[in-house]
Image 1: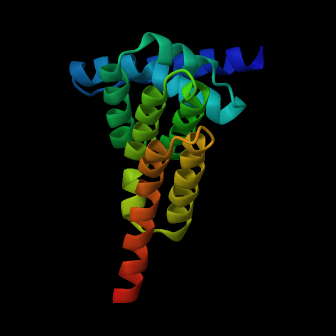
Image 2: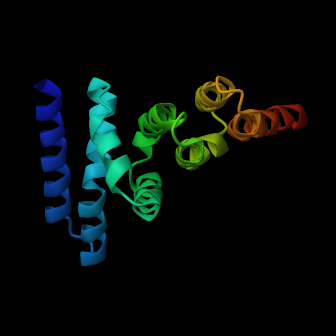
Length: 169
């Protein structure tokens, strides 16, 4: 359907970008490796489609995800919000079966949002804070308070820093 076509287009675009890139071969290789991750984020952003990301969650290693997230942070900052929301969705999908894996996806979302949290822009701050609160509820619903606290700490710490900056002005 429409989602599959958009995903195919996103993959094709990512592949074209990788092939016509004038950067070194290693960077082209990185982009090809990341094409499925980028396509999964775009599918989620455009259609709310989590199927491509769920496929990656079952087939990719932690190392592959971490590398893709690191490169996404560096090369595609505009994907930080949708990608963080996608990792939140993945965490929600697996929290019952594998809470540690769910928390690991929360950590990936936090890594994606870290640059936004340092930007100190009110709209970004509000997004990061809300994302953290929603993320903590994933674990609160299971009365898993230690993981809920870990998920919430990121947003709180970041909020306190901003409030402290404001007080110091």
